[in-house]
Length: 74
Image 1 (cartoon, rainbow, N blue to C red):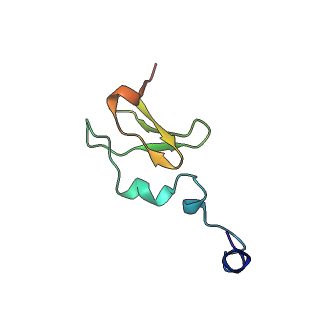
Image 2: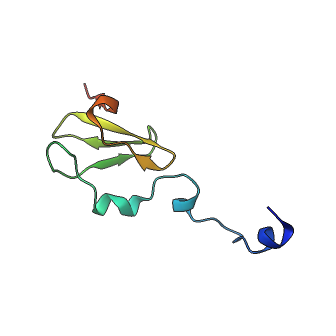
């Protein structure tokens, strides 16, 4: 990155661009199996579907809504 490019960067990078999960996405996302809402677990970086009993991982800010990647809830 050149000095000119670096000077044009914002002083504070929004969370949605830092690799963190953008909570606004919860409004549009549902469990792919039950079509019910998901709960964000910030500590585990997962989206939880209580209805399906699954927790979907979030990697690099991107939710992975695949059964093979989900963790079964106890």
